Image (cartoon, rainbow, N blue to C red; front, side):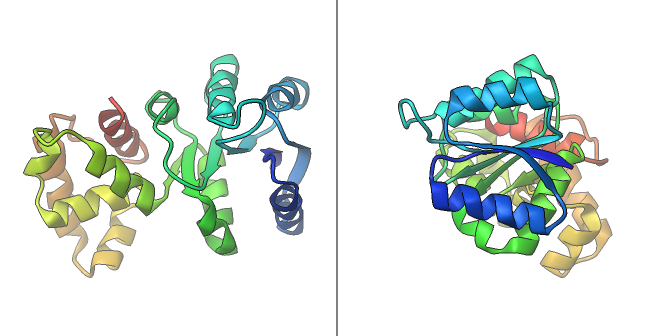
Length: 214
């Protein structure tokens, strides 16, 4: 796998590069600003991006906007976003474009090396890797009259795990229930949200993310 890293914190940038190289992943570029990120994507055509949200020149959402632009230029380009918090601006466009290969992790999760690498591989393969806290905040920020209010506490748990990109077997294991129970919860969730009852692969995750970010 060939990866471009975009992170303005030099220590974290070098740490990420070393971590990926140690894991056998080629880092073709490690940059500290949005413009260099886009230049690296054009020049090196990486297999995935690891992008910080806040970078120069404005230190607001430059990294996220650059990631969205990179996906417009190269549709489906896998992007794993890192952030210290959940950033709303442009996140909906990135997460809900229906192309797959997206992830959003809080930086504190990078310390869990196995989980971080698993998330990167999942995103690079076209899947989705969402931080549970990101999903939790997206759920909370929905309007009070939103259909999500109709979900039961268990259905909300299942929804959050779905959005992480987990399959039915793993969800069942996490919640200590049967796969049949998970399947039933998912069908109920999709019915309440008015989404197609597709229980296969990352398409269901993309549908959920598109709904949450609509």
